[in-house]
Length: 219
Ligand code: AP5
Image (cartoon, rainbow, N blue to C red):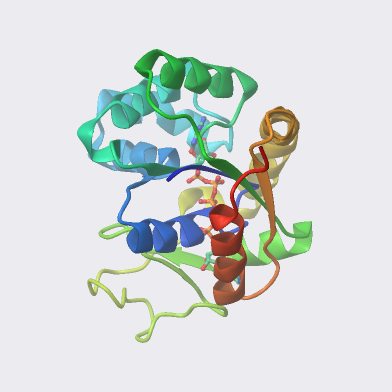
C-alpha cells in the first residue's frame, strides 16, 4: 500500500498515519518528524530547516525532495509506505511522480485528503501535546495521556510543539491554502484522490480512512 496523506495542519494526518502504518506493517514517512529530529540533533539539515519551520513556512523543495528520494528508494519502503506531509507543493508532487516512474516500481495507490472546519484545526493544534522521544501524539481534551504531562508509551515528558503557537499556526494555515491545497486538484485529475471528512472522533475517522483506502480505484 502506497499512500499520500494530504490536509491542513492539525487535521489528524499524523494520528491516522501512525495507526494505519502499525496495522499495515508499513512505515509512516513524516517529513515534519524527520525535520524536527534534524533540528533537535543540530545537523546541517536541521540548521537549514529551523528558520522556515519556526515561522510556519515550507522548507525549500529541493531539501525535502532529497529526504523523500532517500527514504522511498530504501529497503524499508519496499512493501509500501504512508507519506505524511509530503508532497506539499506541485513541484514536490512532480518530483515524486518522476522518482516513482524512474524506479519503475508501482505508483501511489491513493491520496487521502482530510478536511475539518478551520475552528476545529485551531482547537486541535492548541491542545496537542507530543512526546519528542517516541513521537506519540496526544490531545488535552480528545486524547489525553493517562498521567498528566507524561507519555503513556515511554513515560517521556510531553511538550507543545514550537510551531503550535497561535501566530505560527495562522502562518501555517495560510501556507497550506496557498501552496498545498492546489494538490487536491492535481491528484483529483489523476483519479487518485480519496476525501475523508475528519471532524468525527479519532476512531470514527480511522474507520472512514480504512474504508477509503480499501476500496479499489475505478478503472
Ligand atoms: P508537519 O509536522 O508535517 O506539520 P503539519 O502538516 O502542519 O501537520 P501537523 O503535524 O501539525 O498536524 P497533523 O495533521 O499531523 O495532526 P495530528 O495528527 O498531530 O510539518 C511541520 C513543518 O515542517 C512545516 O510547517 C514545514 O515547515 C516543514 N515541512 C514538513 N513537510 C514539508 C514539506 N513536504 N515541504 C516543505 N516543508 C515541510 O493531530 C493534531 C491534534 O489533534 C493532536 O493533538 C491529535 O491528538 C488531535 N486529533 C487528531 N485527530 C482528532 C480527531 N479526529 N478528533 C479530535 N482530536 C484529534
